[in-house]
Image (tube, rainbow, N blue to C red; front, side, top):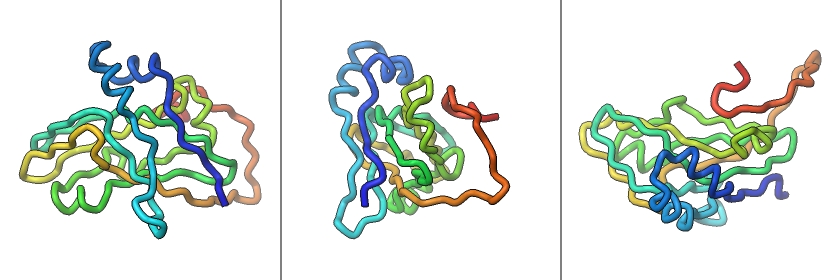
Length: 161
């Protein structure tokens, strides 16, 4: 059963979110890879960094993936570090687990999935462009019986309060 579809965001949105100069943004944008599973038994979809990242111990960064995801209602995409990144570098997500809601797809930023990471290890963390660094897992979620909500999302990070 397929409940979602990954897509690239527009170049204009990537350029705006990346903080890169236009030439570097074009180069990174052209190399964006759609997340995919490593094997037929993999639960997680590997996300690739479109940029080269070097983080010294204690440093953090927000990586623009260039990816958005259309998700059916009733499902959520959760973002986690790849286990190898945690074991080798003690890399963590700044928000511990990324939650991508189905209505994020229509946010003002085109639903651009940005991933904040921190190097909590003792050695430099290097992620080359197109290296896999986090994984996304789709999960079904359920609503409480008394749930009634008709609010609409507009912004990105922290937009719901």
